[in-house]
View 1 (cartoon, one colour):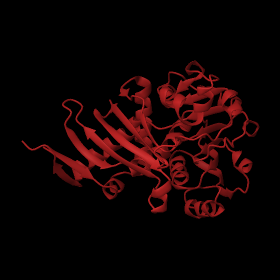
View 2: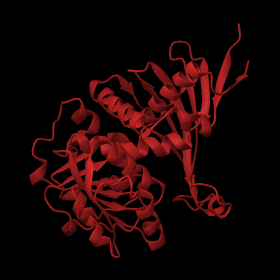
View 3: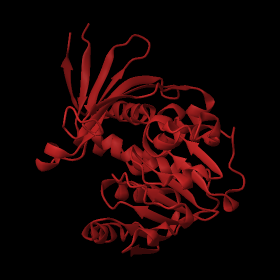
View 4: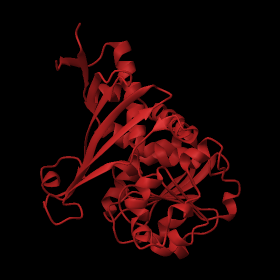
Length: 332
């Protein structure tokens, strides 16, 4: 009996999934978190010079295993981000691979590129979370970061909302102008390129996806009725904003307390797990609804979980089987 493992490259995956698919998969997986049918251990971080002085490679890798009940699939993503030499070589910041197994017997079913899936599901997380917290179909967005994730975030929000206005700020003005041109057919309303960070803080949702550690999003900028999404592994929000939020909602409590936006205040003993109102899964499953968002300042931190990657990868794998896509290799 052959035990061939499917191999899928980025082009294969791109042909199998749309942003609409990703939004639906992310939504189902958040609900799975809330219902307890998703198993997602805290990611293991290998610091390769992102914050440590040795080794000086200006990067990190994360091991992110998960089981997703609604698909009955398990696997692991090995992924990270690198500046330094990788940037000098002209390679993308994100590097990732995903391995899927049959959870009943541990057989390796598929090895695939994980970078595209990482970018797609990361883009969808804030939009799906906002669906459960922002009333109505119309939305205004303040966006920090006009790179790959700025584009992905906008595509995902456009799947679920009519974007009345989008304000974008990037430390590289040319990137913001390019974003405006790229997204003009996606955003129904006006796209405003902001010259100063504060100008982009006006929006029903404020999304930060930068590599900043400067805590530049100020507490006084954010008013009741706004939801702030500090994405990724950096520190874009000042401590006062985090500590004075009416609600803090996260995708994974263990991960969010030790990395990203909440790390510093948690490490200083100013924020504890009991201060977290809910997980996005709790909200999506109806266990901890957000009933009065127009009068609250909400901080929502979807730092990213392996379950999202495995869920998306599982759909790609099953579609590839149906369509006869991809290669294979017998590792035994």
